[in-house]
Length: 423
Figure 1: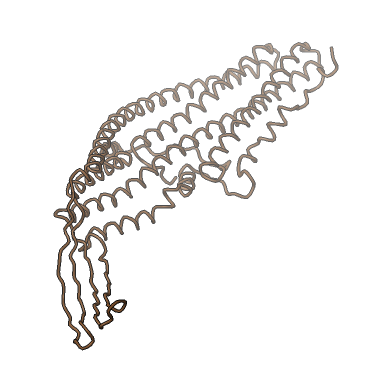
Figure 2 (figure 1 turned 90 degrees about the horizontal axis):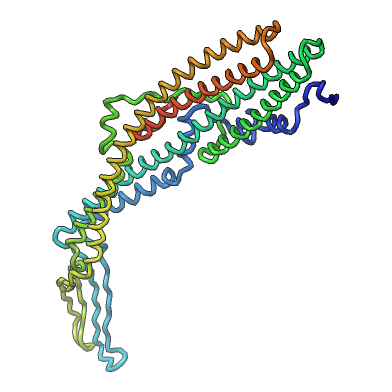
């Protein structure tokens, strides 16, 4: 028998990798950034990094400017016209004429009211687009957060599994030296220890990867002391109202459809260019011996146009309105189906958690029984290892079921359009 098998197995590459991927490393990433301790903190940090959050104020300014333009008395800004006429380059008899005028674009019939309605719809769309972007960010954060919580739970269980494997291996080594067990038993104990080391390394890698995913979203790593408590269950009465226009995803589509309808209404009256009111004053004289005369000019410039010139814009606006309405209908149906599915998953997660916790409790008690009997020599090592493996699997199942229940609650809140709340 090789001599190395009679001594404790030294930690190799697997264990070194597990130590390198310890929770202390996954806590802050570079040691300077503060870690997030709750789902709401991660969401707040992630939302601050989103383009929609940074551009909100500018979009509001654009909407206000469009509303002010629609509420003005003229269709466009007035234009100033200046001209001068002289005979200085030919006869040079002193003939002069100076004209100063202004052209004021006028609204077409019904154009001003429709432009104002379109500006109001676009102003509402700024907020609904903001809320919908928040909800999409919440979906990504929730998925990454509970993936990290699952990885953290499995990493903790892997550390406990390694500690138990080391304890069993130590007991076996002492009993082999005492002659109570055969070297084959030591082989099995050392193999179980090596398997626990590999499991810890794998769990550490998964924990680090999930933490990096959160860092990509929020710009910070989760703290090791982060809470894993589930979000609050949504109020059934409030949940019923969130399936209508109060849902951020549906509200965004409603506003998009409204903008398209208002654009179609505006295009229907813009069949030609805006007429212009002309106001001008003229100061003129004849030859040098004539006096200066002043005249006023009032006029209206009415451009002629064909309806086909704006037919493409009107048709495009109606097509966009139709697409938005159909998309809204499909999204409403999909949302109702997702709510039913999320509720069913939540009930199933509760049942799985109850069963998993009962199994973990029974497996833990059984492990305690066989641990005592093994130390007393009443149970062989294969049975002890099998009971230990069953207890580890039961703990893993219970841990996953607990996180799955919390994730199911988050999923239900997500499909109802509810953001993470402060915990």
